Amino acid sequence: MIIMMIGRLGHHRLQHPKQGGGGGGLKNMMGRLSIAVVVLLICTVSLLLSFSSTSTSTKADSRSAAYRSQINVEELWRSADFGGWRPSSAPRSDWPPPPAPSESNGYLRVRCNGGLNQQRSAICNAVLAARIMNATLVLPELDANSFWHDDSGFYGIYDVEHFISTLRFDVRIVEHIPEIRKNGKTKKIKAFQIRPPRDAPISWYTTDALEKMKKHGAIYLTPFSHRLAEEIDNPEYQRLRCRVNYHALRFKPHIMKLSQSIVDKLRSQGHFMSIHLRFEMDMLAFAGCLDIFTPKEQEILKKYRKENFAPKVLNYGERRAIGKCPLTPEEVGLILRAMGFDNSTRIYLAAGELFGGDRFMKPFRMLFPHLENHSSVEHTDELVENTRGLLGSAVDYMVCLLSDIFMPTYDGPSNFANNLLGHRLYYGFRTTIRPDRKALAPIFIDWENGRKAGFDEAVRRVMLKTNFGGPHKRVPPESLYTNSWPECFCQTSPQNPADKCPPDDVLQILSDRLKSETTDDLKPLTPLNLTVSEAER
Picture 1 (cartoon, rainbow, N blue to C red):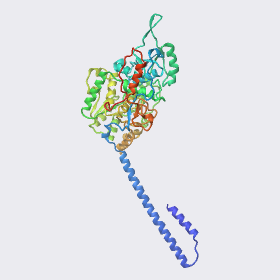
Picture 2 (picture 1 turned 30 degrees about the vertical axis):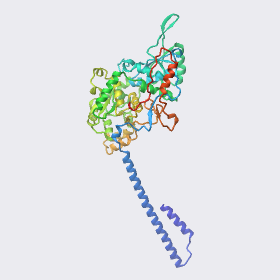
Picture 3 (picture 1 turned 135 degrees about the horizontal axis):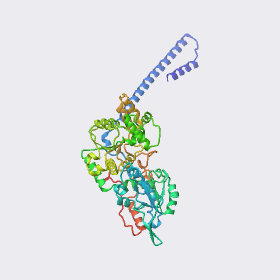
Picture 4 (picture 1 turned 180 degrees about the horizontal axis):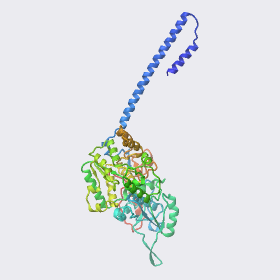
């Protein structure tokens, strides 16, 4: 601004040359001095205003930063803001009933491999695959894999009758491939075995798989984990996955009762938080985060990695700097303390055997002494015998689902954490705390190196960027099973007609249509609610 004023003054002088005469010279000099004084005053005022504005802006930014660094812990114990949305996976458009036995293209068998939650996703995909192929689904098989050493199967974990009943509008499900009579003889249909491609598109099921099914009468897809693409441009198909995941897949009554008993005991003393502490041998070996362990422990992790994962050179420092390492128990405790949780907070730990012994848990326990797990809350012989099997995982899943707050410490390739994030979103936008490991990594590295000033403030700034369990746009690589919004949600008064909730009698309509088109051997069933009510939340 000063430069502009000086420029204008020089321009003024060029346009008004000296005219001669002493009086005129003095007069001109006085005029120039007056202009200079005016310019000086304007510049001074301008500078003062600029300084005042900068000071005010700095104070405003300071106040804004202070506001952004505040986390109200009491609000976190309640569900997140859901902005008028509610969960609903009922069909929004015409949804014909499954084919009668005589119209089915054949039978679909699948073997779901992996842990409980990987199998859960596979079951959802199996139902959708059967719907796509107009096929009859054989009750999915659960792999008694080497990790779980558990052969409970579908019958041992899930309520089979509820599963078949809930999906009666979507697919026809049988427990076994029935025998057929041909030329006066009874024989079994042998399912043709196929290894489906990973993340196969719908077109693979409607061509390759369907061709084999029509030829052989039945196909057997194995292994069946991540064998159907998640991102499908058909919201009705995505809603079917939600109906399977959040309504049809219900654990057996004794598992539900056991889980509720644990929740009741924990909640009898107030709010409680659940944490999926993924500081276990398999995940640490997968992540390649070895340097914090003793030489002997590092050898164990290296051996496990060599036997179970593809060869890859991993540098701990590089992995640590970009947040690829699971949070240590102490880091989890430091995050919670920085957010404002105190040592009276009750925490339920859903975790397998923590690697590295008690030296890693001790700092966490000093910060939060009220730690529990399913064995410490509920002393039952069944849990003791099956604490690391499907039963223990199922109980952990339900307790985490019903907890007031859920925090996964490593939601990368963790099916348990990712499925729970999606289920809690669907189950009433329950609060979740999702640490951004990449953003937190440099903060923890500074802390480890003794630069601890401003640590809590820096952690709070990172944590405030989370949505704490509210609806948010799904961005790859986030999975549909982690975030089914908006396909499996609706609004009663939407701005977009596509988001409108289905009519309250939609299931009665489906039930009436099913009754009119099914054979006599399928007995009528009462309608089921495919929305989550206030009472359930």
